[in-house]
Image 1 (tube, one colour):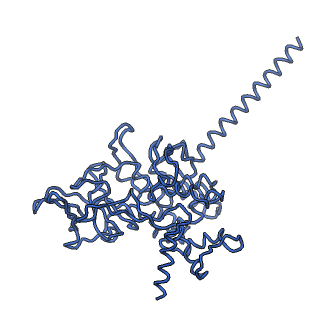
Image 2 (image 1 turned 180 degrees about the vertical axis):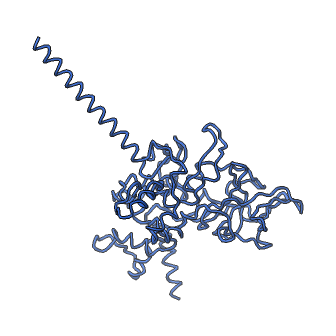
Image 3 (image 1 turned 180 degrees about the horizontal axis):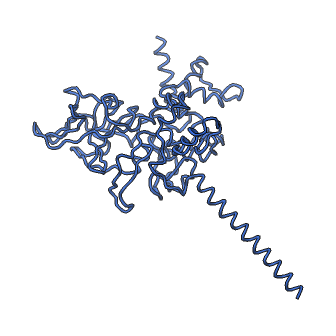
Length: 414
């Protein structure tokens, strides 16, 4: 009898221990998911707005509002719209005799289709997308749906042009999806069911630009806590990308700079720090850098670069400061290169040019601007596409580009 009791007690102990282990395991899993935000549905009320960051992080805020990310979407104003509204420069003609005029009136900014002097339709500039670094395109609201206007501004040519991929006629009904907005805004609420292809949005919930909360997560809880506990110097309820693993950091940028991604969960579900593959499937057809366009998949090109392959800590933010506008700061980026490529490491540039010149510009030789096939437009009166020239992130030797750069130096000396 005593033996049976002992066996029962031992069995109960094993079962109880097993249950405790299982409970701890599942609780840990739940806690991990909550911390990364993977299972939490993000809502508009979770956001504080980047203005709320200003009181504690003024210097960072003041520089960030000048970045291309911050201005990747905004309301239309005479300042935010980069194109020319002056007569003679404010229209795009089509071969069929019609044209689209870009007009500024007392009631706003419009794109208007005309045939001769007869107006066919007009729709407003409701949202400006694109900072103007490479160009801008414009969206308009039809009730709760968003559509793209037919005319885009192309910075490279300083001209209005037919929006990329549009036919040779005025089309005002190209649908804008939540996936488009996921890379051109911080948040918007979708009101239509998942199975509806033409999505409805709550326009009151749009947070323009890629702002602080796109990379640091929704901050309402953080702002409320820090406001109530101003002496607590340890940040609570906020994501700090500086503490990310390499993969977390790459995933955050890859959301919009990682090529063609097919979403498996609703747009805006991914939060900084999450695993991107939990929300998207990667394009597995890309086998070489030759198949990657210079627009939209900077990470894909970077991964084929020896700089990335041989350095297991290199990420996008190794070179890019997301809080600052570093456009055309070739010297700043070149100094990043010098961190690895220098005389001490015996791998400094061997081109026979003044060393100061070399230190100021690694970029034009090793990351030259190349023609994009994804962003190419028809300019007025042209039948051949004009590509956007974008810096490649495939870092390597480009002998022809080096020759061009050296030639430009000789011309500058004359």
